[in-house]
Length: 445
Ligand SMILES: [Mn+2]
Image (tube, rainbow, N blue to C red; front, side, top):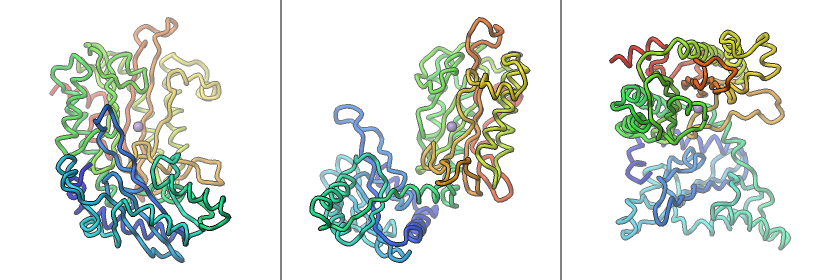
């Protein structure tokens, strides 16, 4: 993401929201300094780089998306005393190659951060922090950034010299920030709605891809819709025809597509840093066979029950259990599992048909932070208004000879993105057809 894109991002309240987040973070840590480093650029092949993806924590607190940047915060008695953005300096010859940079002067103005300096000044700033602060917060990442290497070497120097530097403790800031990130504010929900809207547009176009004789024809329609709206893929889309759907993370997207098969699409648009994540399953011919439809109705019923279990105060595990019970009832009706639903769950005989979980948090990351159990709690966390979770049960039937022939190798997943509201929930992605009848109707054109 270059400077021009970052500039266009102002105007939706995100920059002001980021300022509020910095103050809240200071309130939560009380006293100490914090260093947030940018994600590294990743080389794809000699001299060619993957599209740059910022670090979620740094972006959440700054709205700044350039590589080679960092944010230093200093809190005193719960007040934000200093905030310094470090970024690349202006450099006409580099900018001729890589595009415009903000540079410290303009970055400070555009992003409303009190101080800004060139990234080359960061080592000095870290030295100063080490002299003045006992506790330094950071995001531990196995020491991949220069800033992090310096924090660790400063700690080591301290132990070698016996306290010449003051950092006594490096603390993990993700424990604090994940709690904040789990509940989305207005500017984040605005972005997630747009990501959801473009994702649904992609699914609608993909179901009508012409020609539709290779999986990549379908994938192309998804990507075109994301790009048309100024977004991009939040992750490699899964477009899986026939038994490819039974490979959960299939993303080759290069197989032939045949009439009579189902196609599972699991794809999401990322818009201004925020992700959507939607799965739909449709028949290539435009009409479900009776066997395909029978399995589809089971997954759909499970997905609806999962969504109904999403509400403030409910635990994530309630949603998981609702989906699982419905899937097991369906597996029994389809003749794929025997015994009572309780037996099927206790024996885990559903596992070969449903090996994944029913949902995850969604936000800056597709598998977003915040879903983890709270420290000291052994139960799944409770949902709160402003959280966004996916509901995505699926069934994947193996080709074994003891399974009725017409059911073999059917793979189906249905996934929506759900915002927890004060009263219950809002499905952000219901513009993509979901009931079997709605899917067939859309495909008829
Ligand atoms: Mn998902």
